[in-house]
Structures are given as structure tokens and as C-alpha cells.
Length: 341
Image (cartoon, rainbow, N blue to C red; front, side, top):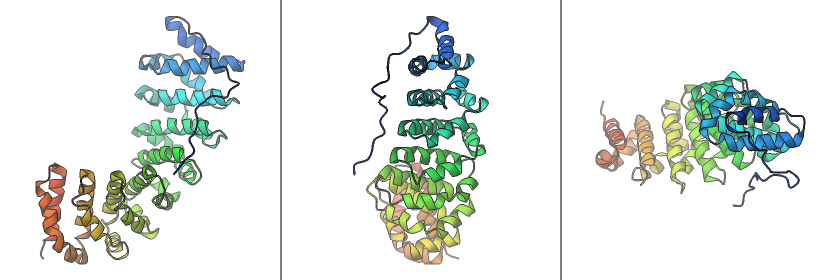
């Protein structure tokens, strides 16, 4: 299926020539001054040269020391697309380093970057989401995003954005939900993720299933997944051709079926037992592991145990699996399935 690709090419009327760098330790102070210049062409050249310069990790600390982060923050509201685009790209590069992520928080850069989620240009929105996703990968950054109340905005954008950006948003929410799931639940994230399970892109299907698994860690999330009927589409994905999709769908079911309501929904409405049994011999270890764990949860219900007693030898065979985690999961599953009161 053909998809629109967000282009990072510059407008034809923009002079792409970089500003000449000053020698040695004068390079970054000069670029910092030029980033604030009133002349558009000077700002364009400075921010483009800076972007190249920052790709050398040795320059990150010095850039932050001379105040580059604050200058880039000011450029996020520039009227010129090229300046906004390259400023967010610079911040993305800076966010790839621990000291850069600290600078995001210290300089309050998260909210102004988030304002570009509504930029009319695709590439500016994409770069802003890349920067936020990079920041979210560590707990302090994820907490900063949660504290800025961006999670509801990100959930809303999943319904309207292009697929490239949807992938970035799903990753950002994945990291944020490790810190706090309440905002996502309140914003209707479970419903949104469930709709994405039928998406044409296997990457989006896999990440949506993974995010449902994240959101189903707390009890409220497990109940919400049952209420919004996330289980049937997750069961369908157990037959997906992509291993990541199968693994994450099984993982989500594993989380949801911890509760009694989740167990009986998966057994009766989802008809999940046979598709999960079929994955016990999957060539991908993560798929096997999550499927066996999900079956263990289902076997805690008498109806599930009755069916799984017919397949216990298939599961028992994996007590000699090449993956230690699968061996442990298989041993536990056999013990639960064969348990007698």
C-alpha cells in the first residue's frame, strides 16, 4: 500500500550554503550570535551549520554551555519553515545525549516544541515529534512530558496524523506510560490503540498492540481493554504474518487475562485458546514466551484448564526449549494446567 512520505528537502528558493564556522572554540559562540540575528538568511545558514556541527557528540556539551539550547528554543516560533525545521532537528540531536535531555527540562523546551505539533508543515511536525520521542526515552524526560500534560494531545494526534508521525507518537506514549498510565486512560488511549490494531501498516499494528500491553498493566487498564472490546482484534492479530505483531498481541492478552473478567472474555468472546496454542511452536522466542504466559493465565479458569489439558504435552515439550525464559514459562504453565485441588 503506497504511503505519503514526508520530505525533508528544502524549498528551492532557500540558499543551503552553510555559514562559515569560526576557528576552534569560537565556532559555537559565533553560531549562537547568528541564531539571534535579525536577518533571515543569517539565521538559516547558522542553524543549518549548527545542525551539522552538533552531529559530532564532542560539540554537544560546549553548545549547551554557550546557551545554544535557549537560542534554539527561540527559533521554534520563527516564521520561516527552514529555521523551524532545522531548529527542531538540532534539538532532536541534542536530545540524544543525557546532558541534552537535562537541558530540555532545565530550559523548559518541551512545551514550545510541542506547539509545533500543530505546524502546517509536515516536516516541522515530524521533527518536533522526533525530538519529543527522543526525550521520552528516559524517565526524567517522560515525566516532563507527562507533567506538561502532553499525553492527551498525543493521543488525539494519533487519529489525524500521517503514518510516519503516528509511529513516533506510539513510541512516545510507550515510554510515557511506563511513568504514568492515568492520563492515557483518561484521554481514551485504549480506544484509539484498539482502532489501530486493524491498520494496514504492520509497524503500527505492532506498536498499537504493545501500547495496549503497557496500558493494561494497572487494573483499570485491564478492565478498560475488556470494556472497549480490545480482546477480539488482539486475538485476530495472533495469526498476523509479522512476528512483532504476534508477540505484542500475545503479550497484551497475557496482561488482560490476569483478571477473571479478562480470562472469560478471551475464552468466550475472543476464542483465544486455540490461536495461542498454535503459537506455542512459533519460531520466534518472544512469541512463544508470551503465548505460553497467556495460556497460563487462561488455564487458571476451569474452562480454560479443561481445554488446555489436551495440549499440555505440546507445552511440556518446551521445557527443553533453547531459550531459558521459555523453559521457565513452560514449566509454570504445565504446573498450573495439571494442578488438581
